Length: 281
Ligand SMILES: [Zn+2]
Image (cartoon, rainbow, N blue to C red; front, side):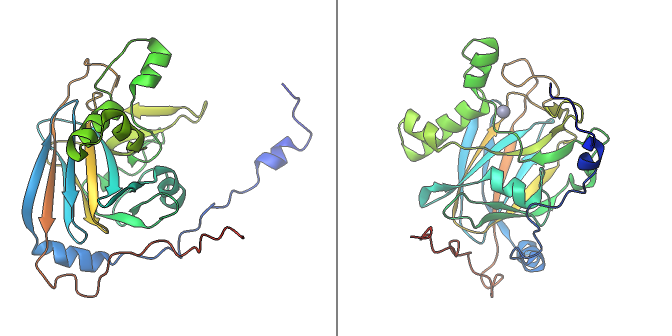
């Protein structure tokens, strides 16, 4: 290894700066959303079975809530534009804009060249958790999704109920796309209820038992028409392993709520990103 230079400590002690100061991000009108939510009525629900995935549709201006039922369970969430599946959740940029974990008031952004808010978190019953002594927090945008390819790479075998496969089957079933075509649309997720971080000594991605309990939920406002896809991770509460049938697993409940007409007066669905896409040519 290269020997440290004489000014190594000085170089290390430089104060970091935030990559993307987000004060200029368009701010969601949370008060408006919450007022609209008060009179909203449930219009549908989907129960995601353990170690399976299910799709659900949410019109722009409606709300969707993901709840823990029966027992602690982590969910892997994909979002698409309902009318154009190529516009999908961009976990990497969401992370760059908001941080490693998301909570109330933060938004899920779509990929390039769209880059607009797809959904806004309006309530998080685990918001109290904060950041624990290990650097862990809840609802991360740092993991990808458990998948059978990494499992095969690390341990061999062919496990079929990783979130990647659950999301693939669910998307194929819902859209009619052939399985392998649906697979290419599956993307990095929001890890709902998952408690994760990076170790300070080695920088490795870690997970620990989720603090979620039945009754806890994460609720969103749909900014555009959405096709959601949620997998109830085979890791259960993700306290031990996540690519096998070993962990205790539970269902997750998705409920859709529609506000009364006029409750969102003054609100409009966000337009596509303003960059002119000329790329200097
Ligand atoms: Zn998973």
